[in-house]
Length: 239
Image (cartoon, rainbow, N blue to C red; front, top):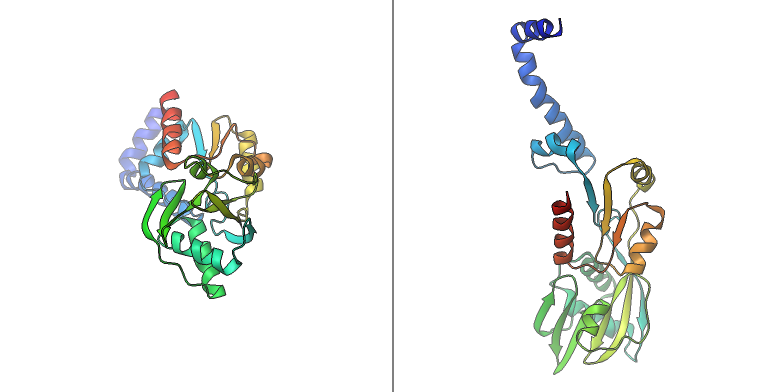
């Protein structure tokens, strides 16, 4: 009886059935777009029922992605203006969210960037340049330690260090509010049977503190973009 019913529908309403699938896909794409989700292909919707892993970044995904400069921890004799000018000069070509926060803060305070020479960036780690014959570096703890720079104090907050030669001048602390809706994400993470992972370039203590109320099965911090790619490929290979 079911087969006969479907046959009648196919014969009587071929156009309606032919339009049903693309119409459903269009509604799905539009609904995702309204929620800030860009779905590039309808094949994604077709395959979503077979998803085995959910991997999320923190900054800009679970947070608003608009960090602001909270505090400058000064370890030397430089003034706030001098430290910001150095930081501005190193960060002005960067596309990292922190760099945008630095730019906005410096423009608000009327700080002009110092012009560095030989600027070089290391993805997910930091930037270095030369000013008046001195090497300056701004970046995370691993970026400084790999260049034989000793960190004077362990910082547990989100941010990065500024160093001249082998001396750490300051730590710039940032804050980035969480997005609205984390409660619904928490509920989803508690219910879902799929493997969930949070991958971030922020220091481990910051990522772990942020995820303490979100039951991810796998939480990793201090990752470079390449580390994240390797992690995703590892999940993919594991099935």
